[in-house]
Length: 413
Image (cartoon, rainbow, N blue to C red; front, side, top):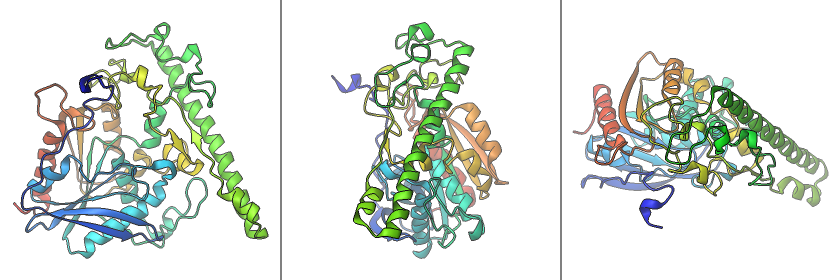
């Protein structure tokens, strides 16, 4: 199979080379709760404003915006969380502490201005961070949704000077609720299916790729209700497993028995099959924008849905509740957005396959800042061009971001 035939071909844009004057350094940081995280600082002579690029799950070291921002006179900090590229136990509450370590470092090395830049799922992490950093310590989150203590109150959460969002989606949990296949009837069987809810059945309105499908309003309503119901069932199971582990931990504290310790440590892993089934991926009339046929993962969601690639495939009960549950997570953009009070830029990509025009409107309405700028550029969610030969979405976004930064902060150009 050639590269052009791969199901996920063309998802990402190749970053251009960084400017020749760039100085790069790798840094290892310790968070307030003792975890180790790493980041890369890239700067050019005279840069006094630094942009912090971070995602809860992905490694943004080579993000396509890095050279673009450097070329426009900003320093760039790219940092991973403690769960980068391995989100089995990703807790967003801990990711806030990870982000805090990065911002404290940037303040400590003397930058005059620190700006967060949240792309995709990094947007909700940034919104959660801004919201928590802006609260009095005693009002911050003190426990994860599964009940694990997390000391945000005792941590230094430096306040950022501005927030930039590029193609932010509503959050990992909200996104998964849109993508999860509700026709799964047995969580242990990836091939189980309820024909009445099968999104890729011609009987329900699916048309073979690359024709656009046509789902009836009745099916869409029933389908989305079933998606919420499946999330709810997994949520209930996650709470059962989390409570089971908590009981074992309490028993061990009383008994000191190694057998109880083993029960507490035993991994309880949730497997979630078939998570590439947003009807909008194949029915382009739903929440229409300029997106091409297909999903975030590639051109054939009817096939990808059954494969290995997908959100929330494996997680601990704690990670499910903290990150992937639309019901339980604290990392929900709309709920966090009122706490984003710094000057804010939101760059919408008109061919976004994860965040749609109605999402952008809701996010803009929810932001707490009195200084909000909204710009739209033509491009796909990951920054690619909508059509071959066009400018990339990331390049167009970089022009907007650079101009917005230059109006507010000193840049080394």
